Length: 144
Length: 116
Image 1 (cartoon, rainbow over the protein chains, first blue to last red):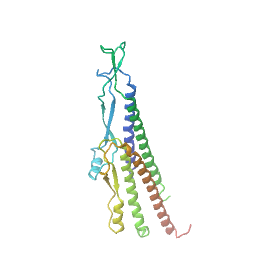
Image 2 (cartoon, helix red, strand yellow):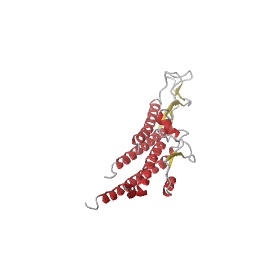
Image 3 (cartoon, chains in turn orange, green):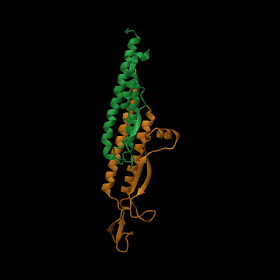
């Protein structure tokens, strides 16, 4: 059994889910931010992940024999074009001529659900890793 | 000689251990890709090849197959199914280890002429 491969698969999944939790934290941290560097306002970030398909020799060899077992990877980080949340605050330095301030269209409920889903998926990856560990240790008991 | 004692059982257990190890990787891959759009869950086809071994033919290696009848990802709702398959496969693997351990114990009893 190729334990390193099994560990690497679970680790790749854990890295993706950790990045997803990081993005949720960024979104929640900026839920009240009214300015951004590019001037269009803060927008919620979403992580796009996919099955990893490497191009090195072992990957191509595995791919030639059928589907490949290489875990997951982060493809890109995109922004959602959600409309801003307009709040009437005439004294605010970022208020427009009508007195409305554009807060980012970040939905705390959606963010929390994203975070919980990512945490659960992370826990599933940890369980798979522990199962691989149990199998590896069990193998050492052959003939013992 | 040793092959004669081990017989078909040991060679089948070895193949089954390989299959269980590969199946673990397939399940881990499915779990790692719970949120990947368009990902098709993987499985290992092996038990059908055991039948070939029983008929006296050389069995093929366990191979990965895509489960095209299941919906492609993202499918976080399938996490429980994958966890059940993971637990089942781990116990199956440990049972196989136990089996090969028993066979080796028999071999060791034969080699020691039952003197302890």
